[in-house]
Structures are given as C-alpha cells and as structure tokens.
Amino acid sequence: MTRVPGQYDPRWPIGLHNAAMANVLLIEDDLDIRQLMAQTLSARGHSVESASTAMSGLEVAVSGTVDAVILDLGLPDLDGGDLLKMIRAVSAVPIIIATARSDEREIVGLLDAGADDYLVKPFSAAQLEARMRAVLRRGTATDSEAPITVGDLVIDTGSRDVTFAGMAVELSPKEFDFLAYLAARAGQVVSKRKLLAEVWREPYGGSDRTIDVHLSSIRRKLGESASDAAYLHTIRGVGIKLVDPNR
Image 1 (cartoon, rainbow, N blue to C red):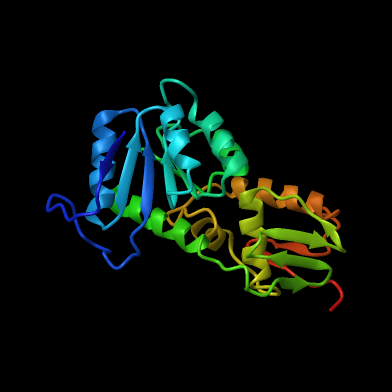
Image 2: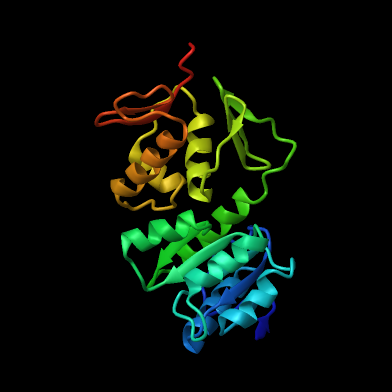
C-alpha cells in the first residue's frame, strides 16, 4: 500500500479546491491508473491511501480511518463485487465503483448491493472529483434531521430507516436515496432526467430502465403496483411523484 498526502500537483487542473479534504482509499490493481487517480485526488486536497489487492484494501476500508472508497472490480485476488459486500457488511463508508465494466444489470446489482456510485472507465478527473463530493455530501447528513413523513410513510435520512404503517421497510441503498429524494419533494413531479442526475449521478443521460427497476421494487415493498398506485405515481412523459394518498 502507498500513501499520497494531499498536495498540489501542477500537472492536474485545480478546479475545486474548496471541497473538504477527505481521507480516500483507492483499491485498484493497475499501477498506472492507481497513480493517476491518486495524483488527481491529492491535487484537489484529499489524502489518498491505495491498495492493489482486495484483501489489503479490506483491512484499511473497515478500519474507520477513511471517508470514502474508490473500488475497481478486476482485482487479482477477489472480485471487487465480493469485496464490496464484505465491506458493506461491517461499514457504511461511501463506496464508488470505478471500473471498465458497463453492463447495466451488473451496475444495478452493485448499486443495490451497497455501492454509492458507479463510474465507467475512462472518466475525467473532474467527473471523479464531482462524484467524490457527491458521496461525501450524502454522508454528512446528521441524525438530528427530522424524519420525512408522507402519509403512513416515514423516512429517517439520518439513520436511513424507512417505516410504512409502523412496519420497517428494507430498501437497498439506492432505493433509499431514490425514495428519500422523492419524499423531500412530495407532491412534485420529478423528471427521470433529474432523477438520473441527482440520485444516480448520471447528468449526461442514463437508462430509464434503471429507474423503472428501482421504482417497481419500491412499489412492491410498499404493497402497491403501477396499475394500483397510492404513493408512487408515474406521470407519463413527465416524471414521477410521491404523494400522500390521504390528502
């Protein structure tokens, strides 16, 4: 493992140095890519620790000393998807998948397994930094924030717990983000493009299918369907809205 302290490197664009410095763990087996990403993040003020194998990265990831993990999938000793599940079993540290794999079903599966974001190589330094800021912002929510209540649905953004009619609802991390985003805008129609940009961090487009799969899953867990919707309504050609059916 190598450690790169946060410092300016003139070979990289500065851009956004006002972002809070974070301790970042980079798990990537390709030396050139690992050094490039480490330089990118350190040039923006972050402290970067790197690992070339899954098991060496796991030890650091669960130590409680890092603020975010950037994880490649093609690791020499263990698939990154399996490592994601191992980390997520014991830690809530934000995890960004950074890989050449672009299969949509695999992306959705990894997001559901606990990844906070997914980047497909090649990507720009600016995009990596933006994704870093996004997951760190989401991780700063405090437990003192009041839960969001929409009818019988209660969403606690601090503890990331959801209850419906007093019963706990088990959601994947991305399902929670999706539902919480709509709940914070209850009664408003949110376009799929907006959801892709804000929840899935795909500002330049993405697949509506990703949203549809998550929407269907959440509906099922709330005991409703597209044809018999009480809370989650699709407005054809416009977007999706969450409503209180008692109003």
